[in-house]
Length: 306
Image 1 (tube, helix red, strand yellow):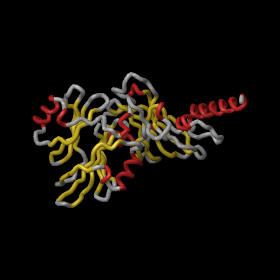
Image 2 (spheres, one colour; image 1 turned 120 degrees about the vertical axis):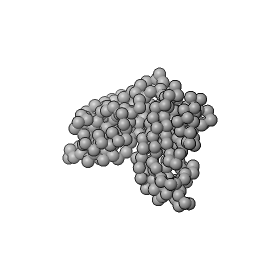
Image 3 (cartoon, helix red, strand yellow; image 1 turned 90 degrees about the vertical axis):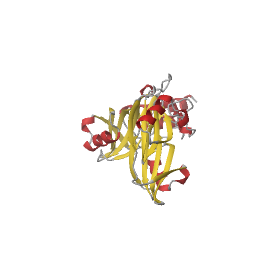
Image 4 (cartoon, one colour; image 1 turned 180 degrees about the horizontal axis):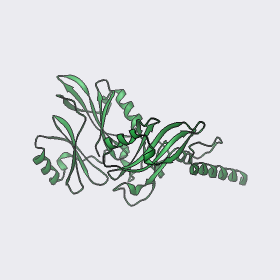
């Protein structure tokens, strides 16, 4: 028994050493420790304190699956990244703050596999994957350390508790603060208010339609912050639909590009009774996106809301 205990301890120590050296390679020996395996393939981001409104409990945040078996992660400066990455971040995460970046290399050949870039956006961390040329691939799922094992990636009261699909961050339009309703009725009197969300930092996003769809953001005190036009379908009308009505191709794209995303709202867009496409609102690690698809369900464009 003592010998077995020593062997298990040695194997655990080896996995931690591999992690500290930056390798994503799982040890070839059998290691009955799912958590350590998950950490070997993840990238440490920061603590939960990096998320405004996350609460008093503290835990480490990880970008899941950022460095697969057989790869090695090498820390690098922002200026060493392909220029296309900075272009993408400026276009999709205006006002972001760079945190850290890694070159993910194939350990056997040192060839570049991808890049992992961590930014802070609206008081929330965002982890993104780019290919060897700097083209965007996906947004990594972020988890708290205590939720690294298993498929859910959340616990009640945690940063990502909304992943249970119960729409805790939805607020009825009729219950919007008076200041927000007064602002919208004055500044955008032609808007039809459709949906609203409250973020962890208590800021509020209101989705509305006035020919096109818009997302208008307000601070926790109800002060106007910004207004964004969502992907447009010219001269078209939208109808709210359930996620089950979306094409399979759209759902596959969302799952691959925003792992463990949370569905919020979707619209079917038609012009003269002809289907033009779909507009889908999702939440990925507390950042909300509006993703548009064409009539066949193929990806068209995306706007980062907040």
